[in-house]
Length: 384
Image (cartoon, rainbow, N blue to C red; front, side, top):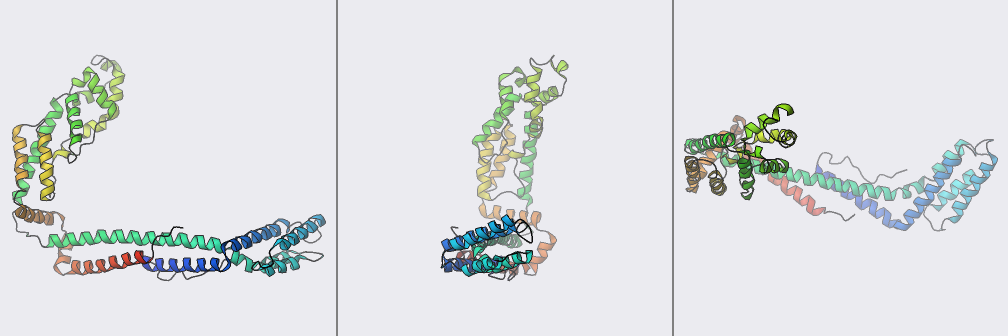
């Protein structure tokens, strides 16, 4: 019989309250184990397990007019078990009571039931280690829940602070002063890359993509090794990518007229057709709304070095214009905030900003954050 040491329904749904309850459970189960001592609890648990095992094993054979030999064997083994127990073992009298219960000439199922009832006090002690283990597991889980809530609360605080920043935006600001140069560059680099991919050899294009790995702010997905190896070592690598993809769709007999080893081309190109088709100018473009001024400036410096490898000078010049937009940090910041407000604020959010709801929610979230942090500080991680 397991003893419940606390009320787990208290503060249900509130992770800080549940952590408090879990901590109380741990403290209570640890106190009860320490009352007896861990070794003593283990001795009681071992004796109880042996007693129940004997009762379960012999109940069907030692009752009524059943197996007399089993009946004698059962009584002898149970008596030996009780005799082996230390005189000062907690609940020793429970084992003695159970032994007395079965010390009769004929046993019934009722006698076995009563013997188990006699052992309930020992069962409570035997269950303590499992209860402690469970309480500690619940404590760890409750603490994880508080940590998860804290992470989510911090994210919501950041979101609300972002909304307040956007709420201060000058919605009349001429955001086209940012949008038009960025869109002009994006369109130009998209056209230039499409031309490069269509006209240059697959070897040149993949060499270009591999070279961008040196520029961490230009995030091309690197080409598969098997594809690179093929275009670097085979004459087919001098063909443009669209032509290689078209070849890979030919039958082997037809392809045999165009390349030396049709099977090798299919292994290298057909299996990587999706990569080749998705290879586009997206990693070279400037997103809208743009990044913060300093970050955009650093990225533009890398993009200039990369784009100049394949694009005409007029495309690079457009990119320099985009970079130069960040020189006046105050004006860039004003226009960028306005652009973000235009792009990100829904009508509902604008209404919440206007009536002060965002500020009220932010205050509540900050209070919640302090509460969660305090709970984690008050109830630290446990080594066990």
